[in-house]
Image 1: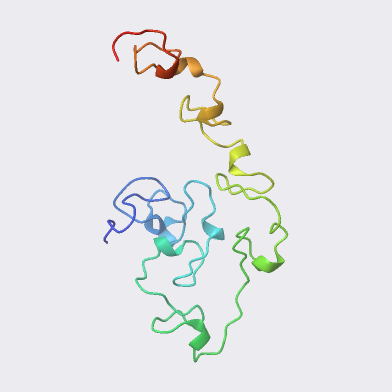
Image 2 (image 1 turned 90 degrees about the vertical axis):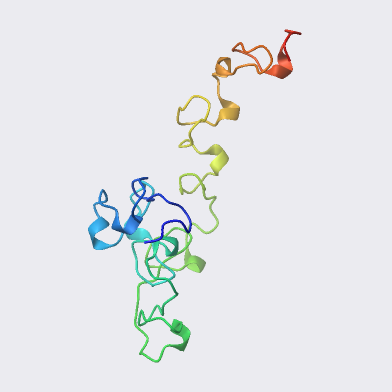
Length: 170
């Protein structure tokens, strides 16, 4: 297993040494499925490399693309000689089965890139984490805890260097 190609940590648990689909701490790890960065969405994911559900192409053990129809490598489903199999439609907008993106009821809704929810954008998401104080619900630029900032000029808390009145040690 070469884990140096993209990220060296498991997307499921955050530890290194294994892929998310083989994560020992995942309830779905033994089946070879499951990803989600803690969001519990493993069953909704679809791999465009091997055609299986439960993981994404970047987490797939298969090194080359396979036919979605027969799951063998060397050709794509359009050129497959096997009879076409009926498979459940999967929407790439909402990740739900039963319809395709062109028929998705969420297609015109705003989608949040932070939580994946609909009806708001990332900037207005209440599940964002502030890098300044660590609280959930706002970002650092809107953080009320401005007193925790330190001045690079004088080293005291409560203001930034651009607002420093100390003429001293710059």
